[in-house]
Amino acid sequence: MKHTRICATDLFCGAGGLTNGLIRSGIDVRLGVDIDEHCVYPYTANNSARFLLRSVELVGKEEITPFLADNCIRLLAGCAPCQTFSTYNQKAKETDKRWWLLRHFARLVQEMQPELVAMENVPNLLEQNVFQEFCATLTNEGYHITYSIVKCAEYGVPQDRKRLVCLASKFGAVNLLTPREFGASPRTVRDAIESLPKLEAGAQDPEDPLHRSAALTPLNLKRIRASSPGGTWRDWPEELMVTCHRKATGKNYSGVYGRMTWDMPSPTITTQFYGFGNGRFGHPEQDRALSLREGAILQTFPPEYVFFDPGKPVQRKIIGKLIGNAVPVVLGEVIGRSLITHVAQAAEQ
Image 1 (cartoon, helix red, strand yellow):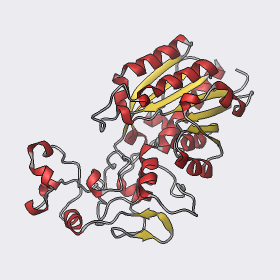
Image 2 (cartoon, rainbow, N blue to C red):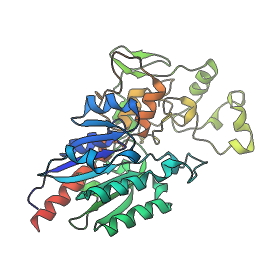
Image 3 (tube, rainbow, N blue to C red):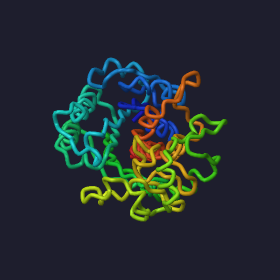
């Protein structure tokens, strides 16, 4: 090992959550790859990396290697689109081509032979043959692999989010840092967003166009006012209940139309966290759903992270998707610091 500096490419990079975390850990991320044109501005505006707007299915070694320096250890990282394997997706099928994008990740590993690999995804991927196939491919290529289900809240992410993290190395056994080794402290919703300016439903902070909340109908305004932090719609007067919740099939969905609790982590931030009826995304105190900025901060994006060109209008649905699909920045930093520690230890041996 002549060099210990790590240079990385982030596949399926999205708005840059994983990239930003890797950079904060000290890794030199050179390139992000994604098929979504809405990712270009936030990725390049916040991170010192280039962006390749192309499907990973069509990307080859020759398009990535020019961005990686010869005098560094190469890392291929990424989170293949996870909606197919999510617990929220009740119609996941192997006929969905996203199901097989992990194979293209493995193909690029075979073509490039990077010294390090990092893959992050939803826990349900662990049960799928395509993940076992991914691990078998890397093992056959001489990588040492470790993977585990990570509780993000244990690493200081103010969110009840669980993720599958897989690390692989040519240098030997590699492990994710423990929360104690990372120096994590628990953080709550209060820690993350209490200091932000107050908003009414449908309003926007004049100093931050991303700190805006969706409007509520008069009925939903009554519903959120009847909601208490940590409670459910079962606490409402019967006249406020949604029709589907009165049926047997809807009575199990107690997490929707709920308020978050100040002194606990938030629920998992999804792509529709900005809607009061889409989960427990009601503000703990104010009568509204989360703002886009609050969702980004709960995903541990820096408060100044930009998601849209200032010259263009804010598109709530698009930005919500970018935020909800992102790897929490702090989890990216955990992965990066784990790999840096691993490389340093390998260099001493």
